[in-house]
Length: 267
Image (cartoon, rainbow, N blue to C red):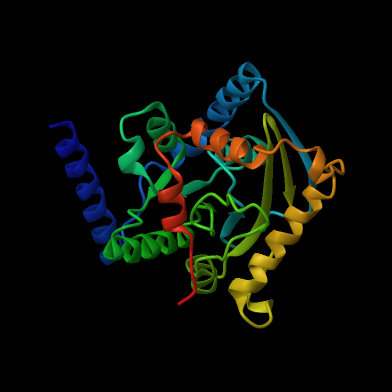
């Protein structure tokens, strides 16, 4: 019964997005989300302190444009990326997120909804299409979007960035949005954040997806270069397995099968 109710609510939301795009509706409750945003950031700060987590912002080279929509393109390593970036930026935005069916009715669900969120069913091709159009509608109404262009956590043991989905590039081109790239790294309870210069996608040479991925990867490398040098022989044999277990433990609704399934693979 509970699952039927969740499915019904998600289908109603999908229908709302489709209608909103078809009729170019004004997105509601923007002023409410803006007003409550500072309070939500304060809640995150208290939660982080209680959990013993720390944020270090290495750089912030971004400049918030006065006359263009904004997309925050964020690398994705785990469950806390959204919270750490939200607290760091102190700038109102809507988050683009999947997994509503996995967190519906939880504290995380209500927190997302109070902040402002655009849910997408990653397994539904039609909903992915309508969600993209809804994101474009939101950007044109002045709503900044927080976007994880890898589409899923990057739990590769050697790649700073996975391949990017194309939607973020297409949305920026369609709306004239500026992309602000943000790299996040997590080592246990220590988080480091590197915010790069504004990106005008029309000025990216060659394959724009690859160009944006390279920008984000460079920001991530800058974070890695700050880490102390460790010899592989000095690391525990099960170091990587423990790292993966820690990430999954933070969000047990995920497993490696789901994560690998959602990674973008070029045709």
